[in-house]
Structure formats: C-alpha cells, structure tokens
Length: 162
Image (cartoon, rainbow, N blue to C red):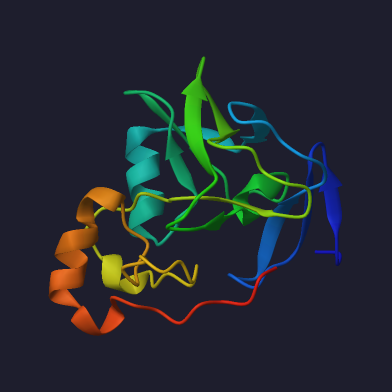
C-alpha cells in the first residue's frame, strides 16, 4: 500500500498500534457512520472454512451470510483493535459499518474492539497500550478471565500517541 490513502472521513497511514491504521481527517461526531467494512459475501460453510484457514477479516452479517473483508478494496480492514475504542461495528441492512461511539478528534486513530472470543485468543496479542488492556484481543466480557489466566499481561506498557 501507498504511504497514505484517504477514503471519506479517514486517512490510512502507519499506526503505533499495529501496521496501518485509520485516522480521522476531521472531527467525527458520536453516532456517525465512519466507513463501511466491505468484502466478498459468502455463506456460513465458506466462512467457517476461511476462518479455519486463519482469516481474521470475516464479519457476520446475518444468520445466513458473512463477508470476507480481506479484499484489497476494503481499507476498513486496517482499522486497529483497542481496549479503549472510540468506535464499534454495527450491521445495518446487511452492511457492516464502523460507527463512532464518541466524538473522535481530527488526527485521532479510529479503533474498535474486535470482540474475539476465548477460542485461540492467545494467538492474538493486543498492542493497543490502554491502561486496562488484558493483553489480548478479546471481548470486554472476557477480560477478567484473561487477566486471571495471564496476570503478567494485566498492565501492558503504554504506547506513544499516534
């Protein structure tokens, strides 16, 4: 990818969290749609096969269909995980949107919690640097369990601001 890519309200560039990240070009208000997470539509059987092959870019859109966001034409795949997220995903009319959960200032990195479950969570360490980060990319409902299993990961080193 080029050094920077601008898509709507977001500029994608290097991130201190991990690889590429999405940053607000201007202030984004709480509740706003930031960017659509797009990809190849597939049935649950194909989705399971791709997930078992290690694809972490699959999103559930309903009981019948998922999308594979690992495609080149999906820059939203570069939005990083954070345990102090300022956005979340929302499925609206079978489309996945990244939505602001609070006002996001211009220049601030846009993040959301990937909400992974406890299956293979140890394969996904979290680099967000939030003071309350459990050290792995898991849904908040699993943080206490992960902290119990990994007391050494309970207080990660803070990352430099982006």
